[in-house]
Image 1: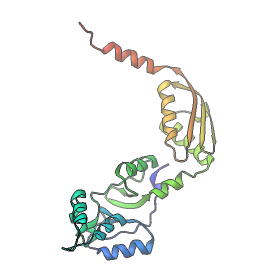
Image 2: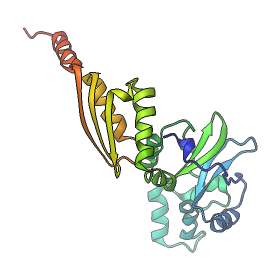
Image 3: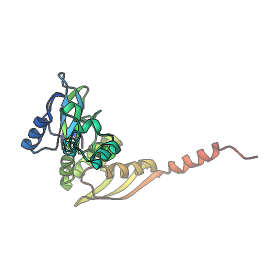
Image 4: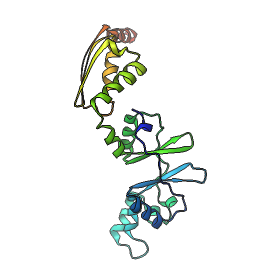
Length: 229
């Protein structure tokens, strides 16, 4: 499953000069937690979120307490606490994803960078936004949809394995796959790719192979090791 199959295309954006008051009203009114910040040409400069605005809650000016000033210095957020516009408060550079990227890649980016949404960019153009909720919805797909993606995308298009050469069963997201493939590497790749299909809960692989190419690789690697004198 690709990002463009789950992303939202009706994207709300703000300009760098948009005030934080306006951003806060927009987030509250639309019931969203963040928006991309774009320049006049539509390029994504960053993302401003509820968390960015919450830094304002630390307060400004000489009336700030010692704890607040320590927090600012500890997190390096002096500039963000004093921000007045989206451009000053946004997180930048933005973490983006391509529309044809696998959903699993979007999930990895969100986890790695600790973000809840990703602008979807084709070249320099913003084409959508994908949020964690979109990925969660993808996980609720039916067994039939999961089986179709495994057969068409994983086996046929990605690994060039004839789907008719293996048996595939999906029950409540639990996948069982059996049959014979060309080599051990292919069998291992099938299992690895199937685990990344949205909606898959577990994988039981009973695949066998005609050629144990991993043993050959290990033997070849051992042969290249230098001999000790």
